Image (tube, rainbow, N blue to C red; front, side):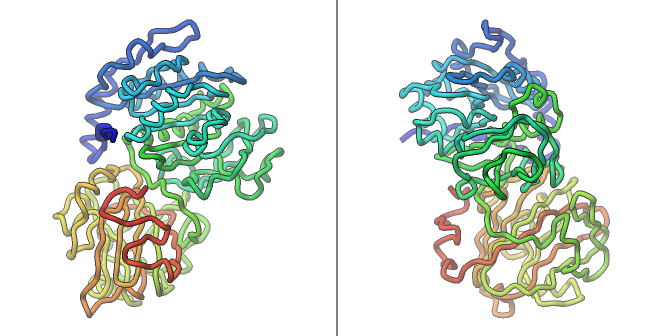
Length: 482
């Protein structure tokens, strides 16, 4: 049994985040150069990891086609490390893939690797590294690598099949809460070499962005063409982006932010829900409007141009007029600006009085600084979240978080950024979770909370057991589903 790697750095408050970035910014970026222009990490990969910030290995060995953008990618990652609080070593020596040397790193970036780049013992070492909680970032031709290693195929998510000429295309952003895509709008216009993959990875990964094949020529995957995704795999975290063929990509601010977010999620510095997500329908996004919603009580929600709902005044409630009967999974993204207060209500009757939801429903709280039974992830006033799990999963103010609120009969479960933090069963005969409405609280002046991408999936009746998730995952105790 391999011992689990050290806990990942988690930013729990604005002050903690600021302190980390200030400290990490002073860390030196390695500048020793090998003849190929990259730092040879072979001689120092056994060094102790820094006390502040994360440490990343960039691996760019090629045994097939070699991208001339690799040096640009290495330099960009070093710059991002200096700016984002992580150190970077770069190498093309596969000898670094030993358990002892890999243990120094929080994530390994496969930067446009091609072909068979690791021998059997090196493959074993990398599998062990991921099993012990390591992170993987695959960039572009990382999907054109190790075709005879099935484990790696599962890690990267999909293997390369073909590509058309470099050209502009429209990228449709499906998840804007993940740090790799949170800076993007609902579509992203960019020029790159767009890969077709041998199989669609959607059933096994969480898709962050997909290509609109109608916006360019040469796509072969049809209406569903994922191009960036993330998932947990074999004990660790894996992020992949199909972008990064061109030198220009690494000078583009949007792509650099995309890459930085992927690295920071893979190292554990930022959190996101990377479980597979299929079958949800939008209750609110940038295209649906508020036609199915109604405001109760004072205040309101202001719609932003980017599909964000922002609380204004209060204390009121924006509730969805379709009553929910039977089991369902509600997902939504939310963000605080500081020490703010809001919440998500479920299981309450239709009413123009916002206090009806308080008195007859249940609130999943958003307020990280309150007492345990009234803090983020709690069933307000009834049951605290698992605070250790919550703290490890929570992104600080200014960053997006994702809730999943799952209702199955009188059972209410809450996931935060993919980690289950609460499991509550209603026993109050005056309340029932089995039917009712959902709503968002606008708490009052000074409590500025934003919501977006509110979506819902009905759960099949046969999947609604107490001991098994509808996704086929055993629930167990609070923690991250695998």
